[in-house]
Length: 117
Image 1 (cartoon, rainbow, N blue to C red):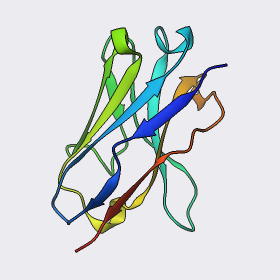
Image 2: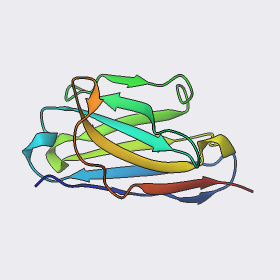
Image 3: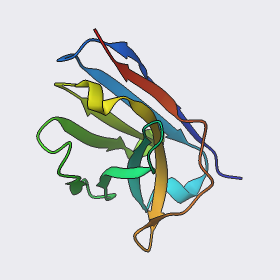
Image 4: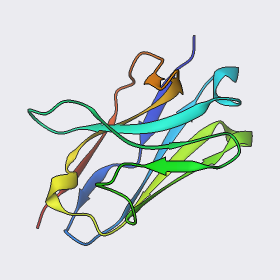
């Protein structure tokens, strides 16, 4: 069974940075599109960024220029470097395999990011 384990969240001041990691078990990671999503309190889960095996990435407008997605295929890990964080970025962050334009696996536990002074 493939598992997704997110880590790296925490409390950060506005303008700060965090780097999230997502480790995936199993071979499903290696050839597929990987994505990051987030869910803020009282809001629906939203797409943030995705990255193909080749390294080609796409971003939601809300994070473009501030967040960078990357992946280490040898480690079955995808990262999200988040810079210039603001309180609106506060959310539970998740990763997933993206197939057919949609998240494919059951969600992991996520990692909490809180941006506050």
